[in-house]
Length: 435
Image (cartoon, rainbow, N blue to C red):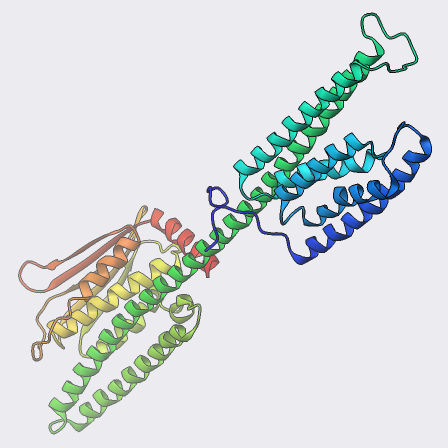
């Protein structure tokens, strides 16, 4: 994993082959420019005793060609150029323009590329101190010599003093500029690396969030599978038992029960295929598998329960208003689970009522039964039915009551606040966006 650029362990990415080739070409170009500047300097005759051409060419080569390694070995390059620059000044090599540019680039490169920041500061500090001492020494020697300056000066500012002050100003700006630009280049590279690092972190978090969303969707599908299997298998078991019970006495009734059993099995297989198909997708979409299940399909659910032997009535109270798909689906599943429990525990012949009440601030689903059916053999309780209903209710911000009625029977009542519609619609929209 890459190092956080905000940490002390961060290092700038080393120069690539393209950058190293560019430095080599630049060093050769500077050497050629330095030779041309040297020829022009000798022609101007500004140095009374200039160094020989061969010596000057060798010194200028050492002053420019090491810049080919300015990114890979910035401190050694600075050390070489600093020493050569002093030697060139002492030997009066008639070239200063390109030499100053080369030294500027060396100081800049240490600030921009040296991975050890303490070493970069020490190296530049030693160079600046050495140059200051050499400059002061040169000023002292110049002040003890007779220098022919034209002009009387300005007040107490003699020509010699003006020349020295000008050199001090140039050198201060020169070294301060190279130091600052080098540090600025390092900081810019660090900021760029930090931006890329944070971008990768954000992408990783988004990928993690997407994976979590997929896991959550798969868990929801698993819950849908549980509800679907529990409902249809319970129906099929009751219908098969009813057909067996009347097979000899009433073949027509048995045939009707078997036909209902066949329809239940086909419906179960169809819905199971639909749900399992979403599990094979990389990004499952729960809505595609269950979008048709809502409060408007409750009559179909009640018909299935009636075919299984229950006596179910359905009533809708109040003025219906639009609900989010998640609210509709969860209320449908709670009604389905409740009727399944009636079949499992009270048996065929049980009277049940399904009420949907639309209030001003709530929507309420109530499933009640009288518990007076013909219960079959005791069935093992998996313990997931009530837990699933409670989870669905909590997801809607509602309340669940599931308790025995006074006398016989059972009641399941779910109340969902109207404001939960907006919350679930927003959550559903966000979930769709993540997918």
